Image (cartoon, rainbow, N blue to C red; front, side, top):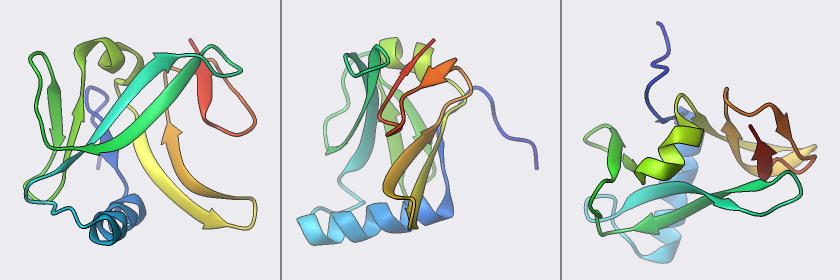
Length: 115
């Protein structure tokens, strides 16, 4: 299978963790989606954002499938095109990871990057 380099995707492990967090938070995958984004800041210049949302805004890009939707604003998508959202629960770190082919440098914690 060839990865879609024009989309934002999510691994099965990350999808399961999102469902667990939605359940803990009392939000439904049928009414909410995962919003990803980028903002200025962090030790490498740009920081990733990840949250639940239930409101599509003008200019939002939608990805995913009929089970779990991922939404990103157009400005952030320029930095996140081709990114895969993953989840790790290993000894060397726990949490969501953005596997971003556009990042030329990332910080040690993986929460910020530069282009």
